[in-house]
Length: 148
Ligand SMILES: [Zn+2]
Image 1 (tube, rainbow, N blue to C red):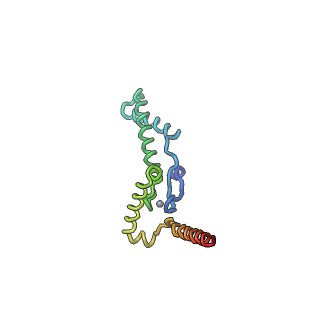
Image 2 (cartoon, rainbow, N blue to C red):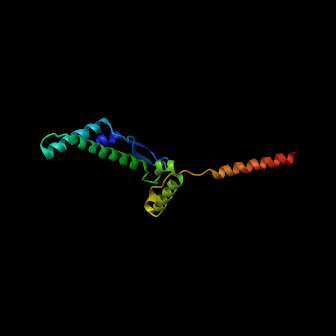
Image 3 (spheres, rainbow, N blue to C red):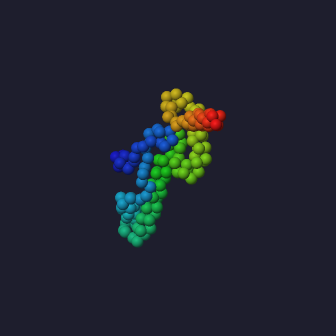
């Protein structure tokens, strides 16, 4: 429990700014390799009562399984559980990430408890402000033109 808490980091979702816990490491560490080797020797000794050269095959299989588990843990910790935002998919294909967030938001809207008691601080668009500035600029340019 303590070991897991040391490896995880707390941060915020890039989209909805809700707090989340994620894992930074996505590769094998020294302790993982050591654990894979000890596990391979233990498995070999349990089943054959001696250490054979097959221990290296088990060692490689253990390393493969641990690497896969670390990758899956890292990947699953990136996805926000509140809004469904996935930064990896957003980097590859923003339209698909947008659809995933919309689906999660629709699912969230259907649940009145989450909507009322746990609202999300979603980012707001500033198009209206930009449109006003654009209108002012066009108005200024029209005034300038009329002054000439
Ligand atoms: Zn989020």
